[in-house]
Every structure is written in structure tokens, then in C-alpha cells.
Image: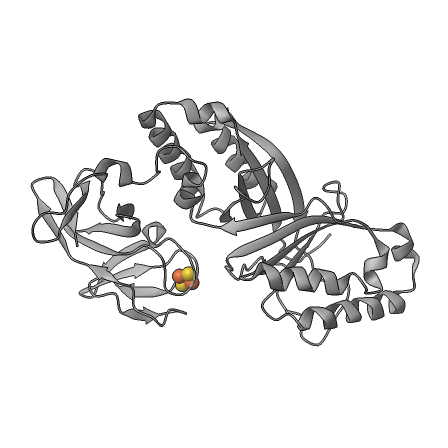
Length: 347
Ligand code: FES
């Protein structure tokens, strides 16, 4: 029995039925809120990244990259998804199950902790199931190692592309799930073309379908589906800034103490927080990666009000946006907030 701490990995592709877009605006809004919250409720139980495949793949709209400690958590997440009102309009376009494992081949810069999925949080994810020919497995180990060394050497020519390989033998139809992260689709395309002439590529039996996925926050991915915007934009649409430049974005009932709320100032997403009755607004996008800071946590300790990013635990001073610790180096933009009656306004 393996003593390695491995993770179960799943790539779940969902397709929304067109009939959902004919629902009323309020129903669409409520569906997105409920669906988004169902996903957020799982943030503490597994690694969950949301991607949109709208505009890149016909049979799928949304992809959820999941890494959990056990199968039961993956199952519970899917049950939660299909228990939402929006779940009644979602179909599984594709599902791929895999597991982390130490690579069979070792190279000088092979990462130590291959049993843990650690996304680089790039803009794009290129995913496909992968099957080698049986002939490959009958080659002597040295020959396969040599071929993989060539493969890795080609990969190093494209430093902006990072590979995540997980294993599916016996768990699902493919042998591997391959997921490349990158910020430039052209660099990935060039890498794949370059790899085609490698020895190991000639032993490929299947490496399709291929998915080009765009990383987004839960709310952005839901809004990419169409329909009423998931955040509060709809409620403040048409709201004219008052004379002094403040714009209403929410009501005090919408922003619960200690829980972030994503709102919009025009097209700008803003993370709004209620800390002990005092409201703070900052740019929703973390300056380190692309995390949605409204999904972060706030703590008020030692006289300091700290916002922690949900992805890499970067910490900001919420009162002025200054980076405090973790990988964050650039301050987040802070907005002025005022409350008039029950209305929260920002500028
Ligand atoms: Fe990396 Fe926020 S995205 S710390």
C-alpha cells in the first residue's frame, strides 16, 4: 500500500442548457448566487479552480479543476452542484479522474512534492487526456527514460508553460491527465508542435479531446455563461454617481460581518468587507495572481485589519491596501466608502 500522501484530481466540464437563458433576470441572478455559494462552501475542503470554456469549446461552458484528499469530497461537491437550482440546467460534458503520483522518471529539477497539486495560477489551462501505446511500455526503461529526457529538454525551451501531469491508470479511461498552465496560447502551441517530432510522441495513442480553458473567479465564470450578472452590478445598474462621485454598490444587509462581497463599480469588480461595522472596499483582483479577494478572509487583530488572499495567503492591510506578507508585493487599490442610511457607496 502506498504511504505517499496523494491527491485525487478531477477535471469536470459542464454545459449549460440554453433554456436557462430564457429564465427571468431575478431567477438567473438567484441561481448564480446559489451556485457560486455552493462552490465557495467547498473552498476549505479541496483545491478548486474555476475556468470558462465559453468561446473555446462548443460542448462545454465551465470547467472545475479539483484536487481533494479523497473521492468522497469530489462526490460531495458534485452532489452540491446538482442540488442547486442551476444544477437542473447543467449537463456533464466531460469528466476526467486522476491522481497525483511521483514520476517514474527522475531528472535533476524534478519537483520534490509531486503528490500535491500546486497550480501556478496562470491565465490559461490546456487540458487533455493522454494514452501511450502498449509498445511504449515494452521498451526497456533506459530507452523510455532517454525519450522522456528529450521531451523534458524540449519543454525547457518554453519556460512560460508549466506542466501538471496526473495518473489515471485503472481510475478512468485515460492513462494520464495532462494540464499545461500558461499565459500565452502561442507559446503553448509552439511547444506542442515542437514535441510532435520527439521520440516519445511517436508512442502516443490518444491525446484528445483538448481543452483551452480561461481561468476566472467563480463569479466571472458564471457571468461568462450569459444571463444576469452574478454580482450586484444589476442592482446598481443605472445608478448615477452622486455629486461628490460616490456610487451606490450594495446595501448594509448585503455585506455580512467578516464575509467579503463582490460588487461592481461600473465594470470594475470590487471586494467589499464589513469589519466590525466599518466598511472597506478594495480592488477585487489580487495583485499577485488573479484571485478574487472577496473570497479571502479578514481578521482584525492587534489593531490591524488584515485581508488574506484565498490562493497563496498573501496578506494586505485592508485599511490602506499595503502588502504585509506572503508573495504579494504590489498594494491593492483602495476605494473610499460611505454609508447613507442602508446604502453603501464607494468612489
Ligand atoms: Fe497569489 Fe493572491 S493570488 S497571493
